[in-house]
Image 1: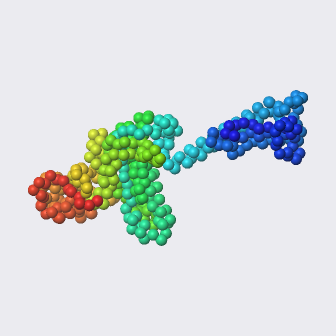
Image 2 (image 1 turned 30 degrees about the vertical axis):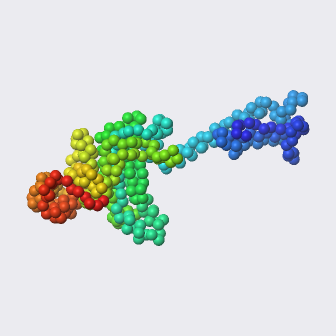
Length: 386
């Protein structure tokens, strides 16, 4: 049955019903342990005895009513223990599919309060693994071993994002997308500036860890990462269809973060930001703004509008950071580049290029390929490929 109903029988007391006799048993009772209406009772408490319990003369019950009531109470206790076990099992399984910030909010506020689809101001980080395609091609005969190395890289990405209380929105092969700014039922993370700072700090951590772990013979050897961060309005929450859903964000900001990540290969920078990210950091006087430099107004391939692109440089304390005097030379060159004085720009770019500065090489390459600015020059760099 689909409800908890005790079945009890005393042989010889109910001639109208037939139960198979059990050798040495005068009576038996069974209480199913039912955990939900869809369960037929996977477990049951079964009792039997060789001597019929004392009861009133002519009483047809297999057990006195107080005995049956006690058996029902014990079955309810077992049922409650099973439900608690199932809840713990579900919670453990949920941890694999929901980011830690969302899991914590579910436990505090309940899924109905958290799993909403709504507009939000978010910072979106897109991180892609460099060098994995050639590696996977070489390891085509042992894909499981190849995947273990890719998984190690994804674990580094995930840890850096979640340690800054970000959420993982998606995995795409060897790339990960994280976001900040949703959910926020208790208003934590509601300010866009906080979300952008957290995204930049996660990016800094990612870059540092890949720089350290790419050396030697560990699972991240010869790997690097490119990171794009964009900020602005999104639709966040439960996305998908009635049949399949996931936690994520949707909007032009997500596409822009992916485009910025793709540009890191062409520009030779590891972390690129959009205009909105720079604005909120500058407006809040964040120390991160001191490490940001303007690259150019870049029109990505396939897009009709240019995007002002910025780089989050390495901290000055890092041995691989560009010296301050070369950063200033780059800024002089960039300003000359925009106003169309490419002769001065070319001259100022020489030393940063000799120091292997990616953005300086990017601008110099653009100058060398075209020699002089076009007649309608507005400082915009048009990319012809992704």
